[in-house]
Amino acid sequence: MMDSDAPNTPSLPPSALVLPLADDVFLPGSIASFGVTDEGVIKGLEDLGEDGYPVVMVPVRDPDDPVPIKANLHGTGCLGRVLKVLRFPDGSLRVLAEGSRRVAIGAVAAARPLHVELDEHDEHVPLDPHLRSLASATREAFLDFVTLAPGLPPELERFVPGHDD
Image (cartoon, rainbow, N blue to C red):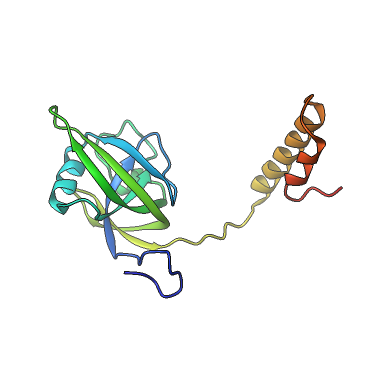
C-alpha cells in the first residue's frame, strides 16, 4: 500500500513491533543484519509469521537495559520490513531488514513484545545556537584540512555548504 503523495514511500501502519538497536542507527534505504536475543522481541517476530512484515528499528539509550521499554528508546526510528530471519540453536535470531522511512515513535501499543504507535517524522530540524555553532566549526575544520593537507585539490572547498569564496 502506498501514500498518494509519495509514490515510493509505503503507507504508515498504525503501530509496529520494535526491534531495539544497541549499537546501530538504521536509515531509510539501508539493508543490514543484526542479532536478536531478547525473548520478547523473538516472540514478537515469531508471532508476526512470514518475512516481509513491517517493524520499526529504534536505537536504545541504554544498551545494557535487558528489556526494551519506551523510556529507553530514542524518539525517531526507521520503519522497515524484515527480509529474512535466521534461527540459531541457542535460541537467538539474526534478522535481515530493509529500512524504508523515518518515523516518530508514539505511545506504547503493547508492552511485551514492545509495539509502538507510529507518527509522521518531521524532517525539518531547527538549528539551535549550539548546533549552528557546531556546524560552523565543522565547516571551518574541514576547510583547514583541505587547505593544509598536501595532495588534496583546493576545489574540495566547493563541497562545503555555506562556504563563500
